Amino acid sequence: MTFIFTALLSLGLNLGQWISVLAGNPHKPTLSVQPGSVVTRGNQVTISCEVSTGSQEYRLYREGGPHPWRTKNTLKAANQAQFLIPSIEQRYGGKYRCYYKTPTGWSEHSDPLELVVTGLYSKPSLSTQSSIVVTSGETVTLQCASQLKFSSFVLLKEGEQKPYLILDSEFINSTGQFQGRFPVGPVTCSQRWIFRCYGYHVNSPQVWSEPSDPLEIHVSEAAQPLGTSPNMSDPKTVSQARDYKMENLIRIGVSALVLVCLGILLCEAQHSQRRTQHAARRENSVSFTMAKTWE
Image (cartoon, rainbow, N blue to C red):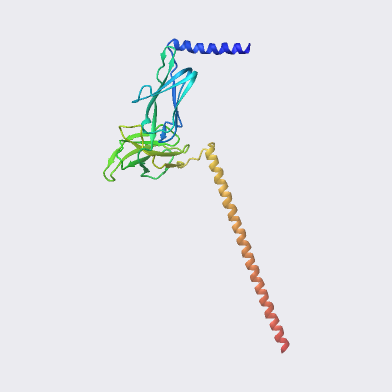
């Protein structure tokens, strides 16, 4: 009885999905990539096409390539198809879409997914003309520069796949380099600000250079205005106050210990001096007594 009920329930759910498809409302597939959309040349990449209705045939399309680029067939309806690229190379950079087969034809294409391949050109340099230590709330300008004639530069923040900024490059006569100047901010203390930059050519925007060395912006707390007191309800402020109090207690303890040691040394010196004076008086007394005896 349980088996029959489960089978009927499954049939009802699948029937509802197919009715939705037949009514002209096929679910739009979702396209994703692991480990990320910005991948170093030679690494493995898995592109996944996922739907809620299920299908036995999925297709992957890459702009500028054959249509379809890849096809995935399954023995029974599945909600996902995976397309593996064992070692990504320059030719795999581009925009991808996927779609799947329905009872009435092919579904709508997914939203585009842009796959970027890095490591094709030598790395640019990333620097800042001002200090890398800035106050919370400020904006800092980062400079990405290269001897190579890149069309554009890309600034990427650590932990993010989408570019922080993309700028056209400009030639600097004084240095003989091409560069992009990226305004970053306003920065805050609540997160880390670590960046790398890349360069690319206009005819292959999904093929980037090697990443620059990382550059971290260190953010300090803003100065407290005169006549105001810190917000003691802020956990960070409370923690800082506690640390400051502990530092003061340690300083007081060390100072007290130094004073005690100095006091001990002073008492020992005075006691030693008294012993020396007492011994000298005894010696003088003995000498005087012996002299009187001989007389």
